[in-house]
Picture 1 (cartoon, rainbow, N blue to C red):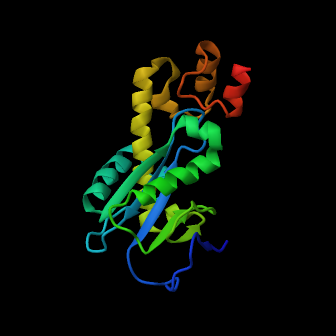
Picture 2: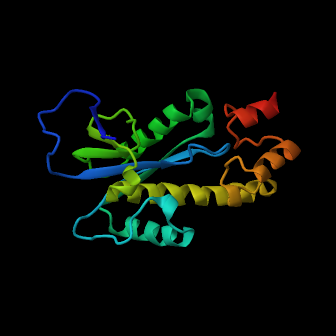
Length: 205
């Protein structure tokens, strides 16, 4: 499937293949029933290559943690941003994800010439941008962003577990597993739960 190219805002006089800084963008946490959605943007340094970058879902947790530190140390710049549970419920998960991605790009210390985003949709940006389906497996900068977003969110889930140990957030990361649904039925929803998501909404009704 070909990638889609878009530009939000006034069209600049730059061709699509203009050389310059390229940022990769990806998210973590669209599917869970609880917690924020996280996005990351990364501009890699060509002079400091990072070996083993891949889709974060295909890496072990230990490998992700090592790469998380290496990316932060070697990248030209990076930014991690979130959309809250309240924003997810108010906007819907897709729009909240786009907002987190927009925040991640806008948080970069350096402004890229182009942004490459995993998936088939783009956040609202004032920079040339391209959506790449399965980009986290094809583009190193997107792979790096997927790792930053995933590890950051997993660490948040560990903190969520400390606050609400009965739910097992450190294990299921907020996804709707049998154990999570059973805890929801027994203990009810926490302030961390996305009330617009069907299993939570059904329980609350």
